[in-house]
Length: 109
Picture: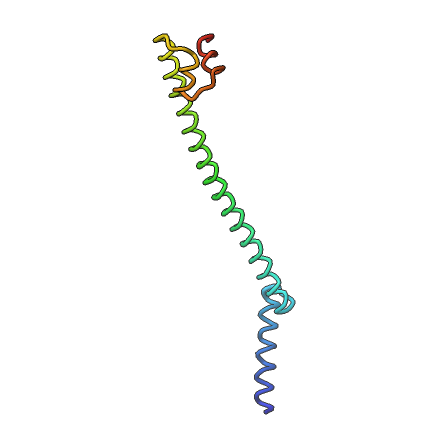
């Protein structure tokens, strides 16, 4: 029994010496540093995931907006062509999807 106790005590002394050599007061200090590093890595990983999600959302919104603008430009082109052919503003608005005010604005510009 004494030999087992001495062996454990020897291991503890060795561990204490190693920890002190590395600048740690005790094992709890090592654990605390590990927890802090883990938290920081987790925060950084979370920030990176947030950046990626933000970029994806921005790209998606940009794509949707670009498609909407493209449809609007196509409607304006078609409305201008119809007006040149002499179609009435109300009919042009109906077939283009533009409001009558928007179609009138095309004749003024």
